[in-house]
Image 1 (cartoon, rainbow, N blue to C red):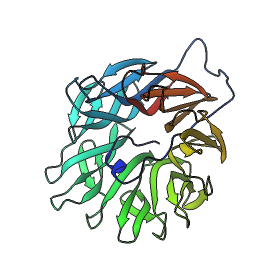
Image 2 (image 1 turned 90 degrees about the vertical axis):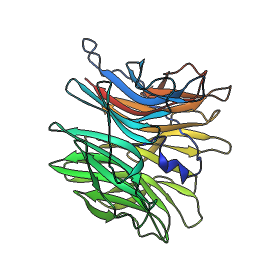
Image 3 (image 1 turned 135 degrees about the vertical axis):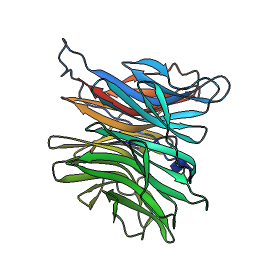
Amino acid sequence: MNTKKFSLKFMLLPALGLATIVLNSCSGDDPKKNPDVYVAGYEYNALGGSVAKLWKNGEPQNLTDSISNAYANSVFVSGSDVYVVGSEWGVAKLWKNGAVQNLIDDSFFYTDVNSVYVSSNDVYVAGEGYNAQGRLVAKLWKNGEPQNLTDGAFDAWANSVFVSGGNVYVAGYEHHAQGYVAKLWKNGTTQNLTDGTFDAWAYSVFVLGNDVYVAGTGRNAGGSFVAKLWKNGIEQNLTDSTFAGTESVYVSGSDVYVAGYGYNSQTSVAKLWKNGIVQNLTNGTFSAKAYSVFVSDINVYVAGYEYNAHGIQVAKLWKNGVAQRLTDGTSHAAANSVFVVK
């Protein structure tokens, strides 16, 4: 599932573009039982600080006060409990039904978390933190207890966590001497998705049956950013030489959905790939980006943002290609993660 968003990984990648998608508009939800749609993200306030936010069916809830600097990066719903992870003033946070818990590791400082997954009452959180030597270490918390996925020899990031069949999968990347290497950890054991010849970053993991899907971004021989999908370690390029990247993958039946972005001649366009076929969520007039995708029945939900005519970043949710504004466009905001409950 997805990960991201306003986190330490942004220090490394240039601001690429944003994306768009047009899906066939359809309504597959039972009208007698409309789904609940949860979106995690943030919005800047008048003081210039960011407030971590959760939207339920478009209604906002502030997870932090107006004087903090915080971001909500991922949301997961289990039963009647709503879990959100993010950071506030450089401290990794987990909110359960709005009540906050600090994810502390006494040997680390400035931690950030990007993804949450709940399985059998166990809460898994993926992220990273600086150790005493100033190295970023990829980390996994289980019920608040931290585990290091890397040894600190190189800076590393853990961007997405997924649990299936008792196995815990984490997608991320590590900055080796030769460049960035996309990685997948299964129960703490690492697998390199790339060999380091060209930079690559893994941002999202989804498991269905025996198949493991990872979405990310890599460079090609010409230095362009390419949207990528790995299935069971086998790489597929979703784009060729166009600057593009992916942020989230979701598999429903035999259909594989990937959310991300690509550049046109001037702006970035929010994009959705279904089985490798791309659709634009935005028309490219203003820069946009898709961060997270979730499929419920035949409905496809995508969270992200798009700039408006005033140069303000607006948090957005697309359902079957139709956009809904989660913020009014008076201050910068983004929707980083979406989760739907029927």
